[in-house]
Image (cartoon, rainbow, N blue to C red):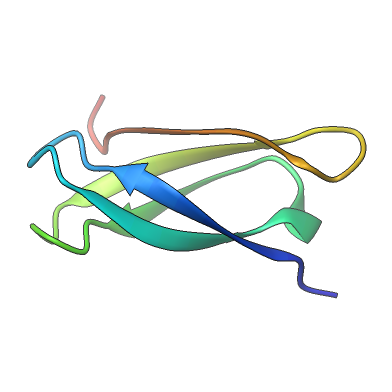
Length: 64
């Protein structure tokens, strides 16, 4: 079952922030999402704790 939570991501390229959703039922994950402002690829890392709650979300440039 999907457990979506909305988060604010910060683009490491253009510096803008935008809202996105993460599926907490998938556990810890790393994926690439395009910035909603400048369309450059951002690597997003999501940590989910043992209770299934959002731990933290970090972003970095795709090539870093």
